[in-house]
Amino acid sequence: MANEQEIKVLVAQLQQYEAEAQAYEQQLNVINFTINEIDNAIRSIDALSNPEAGADTLIPIGASSFVYGTIPEIKRVIVRLGSSISAEVGAGDAKKYLSERKDKLNDMRNQFGAKLRDIGMQIFAIQSRLQTVAR
Image (cartoon, rainbow, N blue to C red; front, side, top):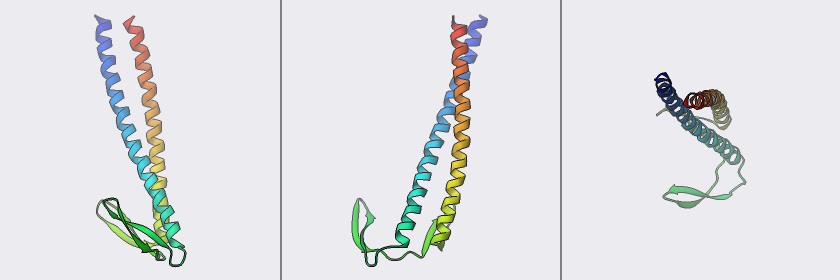
């Protein structure tokens, strides 16, 4: 009877840790996607800050459609500061803001990765204990 009760408790703990690990994995996916978006934005600012004079490019207009346009020199960039707040700043300030945001996201990614590793060790320990108790 005691083993059966312990098995139930261990299985419940295992399920809890697995759900927690899945939540951290989903958050890490969102963070990685956002970091990639920031990298793309920084590269775009760099590329558009020094365009070839009169260079033509394709400009997306939605629904997988494009128009040809001439690249202007970028002096100002609109960056999103929050849920519905944006600000117009210089290209250098935009890159600085995006880089700082990326640094914060990298810190979060490291913290979540460490937490995920800890959870993985807990899951392994519970699985080992379950194998021992089930014998």
